[in-house]
Length: 140
Length: 88
Image (cartoon, rainbow over all chains, first blue to last red; front, side, top):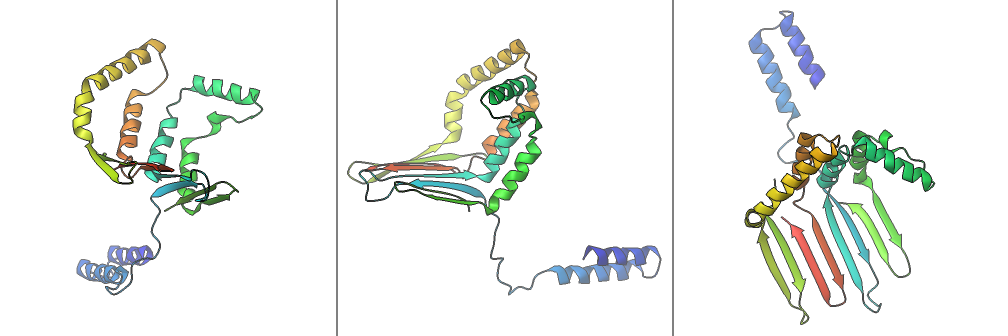
């Protein structure tokens, strides 16, 4: 659609059409772009929440259930805050990680990377079934 | 959108639910002297430690965190005990 609009503007710039004709053509393009009134809504909407559900079977001694809903926007906001960690603190954390046998350089982990990770969480579904508990992590 | 109400529900021993809606604004107003003290303390510590932290960025980050809170929900249920906390 942008290409057609560009062509119209180019024709206008070259003087092949008048401003009025260009306006009519752009209006026609916009009408085409609008979905028909009877169209059903899009079936898939973008997930807004990360849901974590931990449950134990009903038959147990004291069945328990934890259900946490975290807005994805909250995750993003939290990730932005990680950029405020001072470099000295990161150096100390890196040293401790190395000492524990986890050679990860957190300084290389940019907020943009984590934001990209959160963007891809939409399709994440984790299902863990154990004999005494069940864990589900998914986006909704 | 900042959180306006926190809904707290819990199940009583007889199985009935109690619901309490707490407005955030009056609570913040009541706690404002403490919050002011905390903010002053944070500024003094920041100056004393000379931490390499951008204050404006921190405030922006905290504001973003606060704005993203609505919709958060925590539900815990064990046996006859159940608690639900929801930020609206």
